[in-house]
Image 1 (cartoon, rainbow, N blue to C red):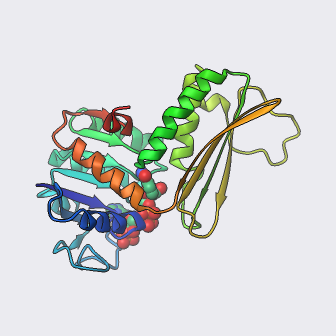
Image 2: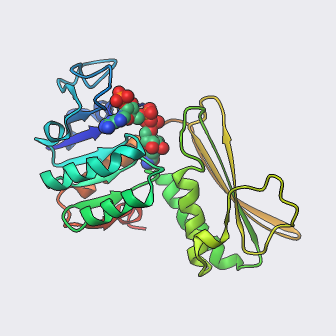
Length: 267
Ligand SMILES: NC(=O)c1ccc[n+]([C@@H]2O[C@H](COP(=O)([O-])OP(=O)(O)OC[C@H]3O[C@@H](n4cnc5c(N)ncnc54)[C@H](OP(=O)(O)O)[C@@H]3O)[C@@H](O)[C@H]2O)c1
């Protein structure tokens, strides 16, 4: 059985991962061995599970302690912590799945450097369904051609910090790449006050934040006379947790390198 460390243990995803590990029962190959929160966390020193049966693992703010017995780590903390967490994984030689989203270019550089030393799986969306949707979007972009307008809309709960979601951005990058365009040249995040019509080739983003929406994404391909919409709706965070555990199992023991959920699913 392999030890797993969870970064961001006290958060929505951290606790969903604890429940998903519990649901899998004693025969499952991963065992919680490390639970990391911030130095300001009110849960430091308490059990990693905030409800239900205790795990026997205490919440710590020390990444080295969280990684001591870990064969793999998953990071569902906040974007500003990812670089430090990745450095700790590098030092401890522990493979890392990055589930947290919204990190900047400097953090991405740290992850790229870490991937020379440990396996790093960057997974802005760990649901199997979304990763299938990503494939379908690539297929649709190629099949429909550059004449179709592409718009990406997403909806999430009111507490989500980054916008558009990491998944929406990743879907936009897939479209841009399939068209041979630079994402930064075609992504449109703001239209308010604009007076010009839509530019051909642009990829527009629309964001909704409300209530407890777990995560919806729609990629629309439209041309005069027809519209193709590819939609994924997550109704329960467990879908992300199950995918993350599957990714973590796959990652433990891999050679150093940069991986994506596509590699896990084998699409
Ligand atoms: N990949 C996917 O499929 C997927 C799915 C859902 C969400 N996400 C992403 O996962 C991230 C977390 O989402 P969430 O909804 O669970 O957020 P959340 O509920 O706000 O949880 C984040 C947790 O990170 C902890 N934290 C803050 N600083 C930390 C540090 N330095 N080290 C370790 N932990 C730290 C906080 O705990 P304390 O305050 O107790 O320290 C907080 O509970 C977001 O970036 C979100 O977009 C990804």
